[in-house]
Figure 1 (tube, rainbow, N blue to C red):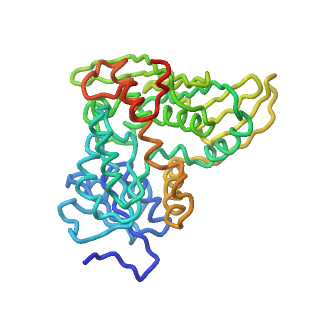
Figure 2: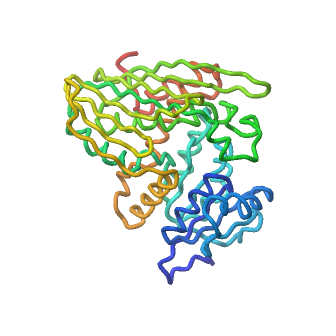
Figure 3: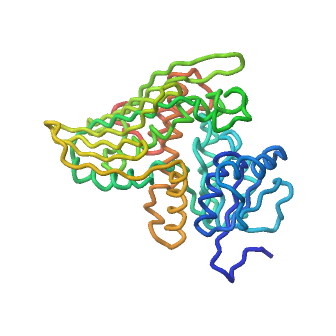
Length: 376
């Protein structure tokens, strides 16, 4: 018999991973009225979360937030939602262990998987056999600025050939400062592209936003993917310090995503251009959306409050919309969108990073109906 309280309106969430992502989402969920259980396999991580991480960022733990070792979780407890906030190379083991305990929403944080095709396909199978709605934790898709941007671009670029240029350039020094218990990226997945780190995966928000723009504009199927990368090997670490992905579409449009882990101050933007218009989303603090004419004249501009906390509040707002029965099939957070990012990243890992086993190819995307077969 499950222990979910159906007599109240309090929604329950299981957050797997007592690190930064777990803390951010636990905060956003409890603030929205959820009852949250955070678990981790590491006693050290649990103690750090309770005594340092959460209090240091947000103050006293709220009553609706509990933190424990994974082994102490009641095996009969059922949850409305689950957030998978562990390193990408552990996501599948978490999903295997806990998906059956979740009734409504499963959110897998980015990077969704490593480069391995077998992992991506298993994630798809787990989603297909679950009654829950699966979401990808690419929360920049659903920020206030991004939502405004997505609403504007179809009218500007309807049936036009466009160029989408994305920069997601940010030193990971900021990540390391937020995790003072880590001496270097070598102590986590960040320093290993094969584990889902490096610029290609850790900053996959960039490619994901570009692919989202292409989908919203209805650019159709891909016809070519090319890539470049700068790989750094330091001791045991091997990671792409910089990656550049170019995707061409059947209608002649092009997407270029440039990601790195060295640039400071950070540069995060999506620029869509055609012969008539240029639309820009600056994903900074605040977020800014602007529209310029072909002659460069500013036609529209709006700014939106943006904090690190707001990134995760936006994600929880998607949970609330889905639970209210709104936007379930067309949600921008649906896992299917994020899986295309994972599949293209797998192709790039093969093209530019020398990872040739268990990877996606363009032929695999053809078989899945995602690539234009006419070019072959």
